[in-house]
Length: 407
Image (tube, rainbow, N blue to C red; front, side):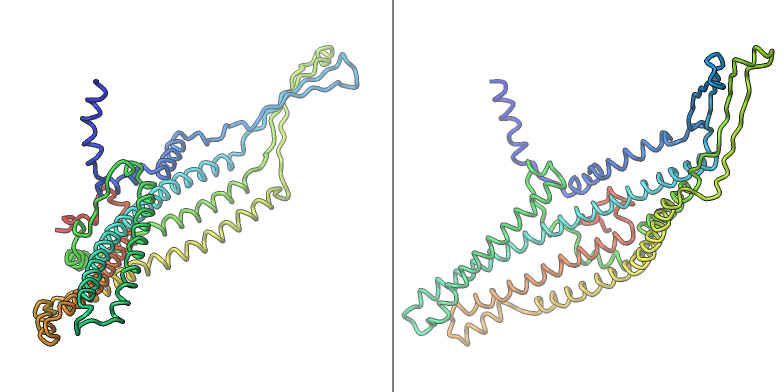
């Protein structure tokens, strides 16, 4: 009985729980990709990569002159190459900086995916709503025309087209519903808690186009070195790896030797030996050549990133301005169009045929489809603009699509 009561109490919570945009966006901070990089960062902070001062220890023994009574013993120590120790530290310190930059870069990519999912979802909901409205108007047209079968208004060809059009509208609506299911699975993969919650995002909840335009006019953003800094650090890492490979050499040894037979000669059995290696040719040339190729590749990617970084912010701002202008133009045209008065005029011309006004409203729905598509493109370009300015990961707890984000 207790379990039943608890279940009944919890049921409304699970049924009416909704996925908020903030929770969905902030979940990017706990994504496995970000967590993995955080774990790498924590591991590198322990500095467990530091090399020991001794590379190895070797115990040796040999029979002097094949005499079992003359057994010599030696203990050889191989000290670490001081240049290798330094360059190993330099390499991993640079690697730690790469991980930090990559963490910011990964977070930006994830936030971009989350924002795009919100935009696509709200756009799809508007399309479904307009498609249902269009379907209902088409059905009304079909029913009216069917009722006028024996009147002068009846058009057999139009009647047949409407019947086919109804089938097409239903197929289009089913396709949109399928796209909605696919997108919901994508959202659930980004935010597993969405599986047990309802998604009720709407374009009416997003920041208005007017506020976006006003905010972009008031704030002149500059392109920070997010991707460029990451690529530059990769070049430094490739150089550090090449230097480490170059210094990865055995510099010699220090050896303590014990020769028992010298006791018979009343001499000290201990001796110290020192060996220094002077490699005339570096044995790591093959690997060094590979690292050199990595440096060249990293430099090429840096140049490409610099070009994209410089042009991206300008292009995205121009795209937002262009799309916004087209959106305002279409909005003005629709506002100037007095549907009621135009419908009355056409009805007078067509002897009050109700089909006339429905056709006009059907055309209006098509115009709304264009408006909604423009809004979707503006929102995406706006997020891309913020992404190029590196603001997404810089302030990850800010919802840039929230209706009251921009004052």
